[in-house]
Length: 212
Image (cartoon, rainbow, N blue to C red; front, side):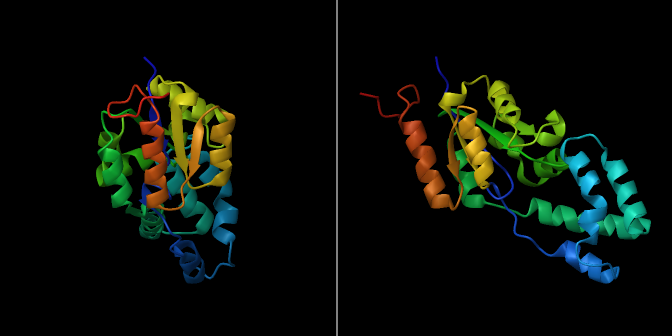
């Protein structure tokens, strides 16, 4: 039996994550030129996104490179995590929760070391879907095609039977290149309509409309 599948991104889709300006505020507080934080931390952020550095090492590098005390470093990272985690997109989360049993459900997210623990605690995404594939755990980020292959493999589904939802156009295009169906998230209403159409098109999904 061929399994129909929906795989979603987290940030900007399941989480509402507007920029908070926290980095700019820290630059002002530390009297650093605009852009200094990301310039000094770019390789650390990259390493954290593919899991080649630990959380402890991230904290150490933040303190050294930005000249922060231990309490300042903790406060800085807390601000970054608050922006990273955003707030839950309750409407979409509730809709996806109602899909359990109608197809395979997964998450594919570009992430950062420590994300799984925090998102599990706050949002219980591990109870929402069957598999979560984080870039910091597999060492590969979207739009690398291998990330999409890993997500499909984790759910034991074929790419052509999967609908991938992301708020970044290049990732949507990459998913299509990997053989998946894909939808650019712009709002909940259109996304829910697209997911429903994907599931209803599959005659093997309970409640689905049989194909002619």
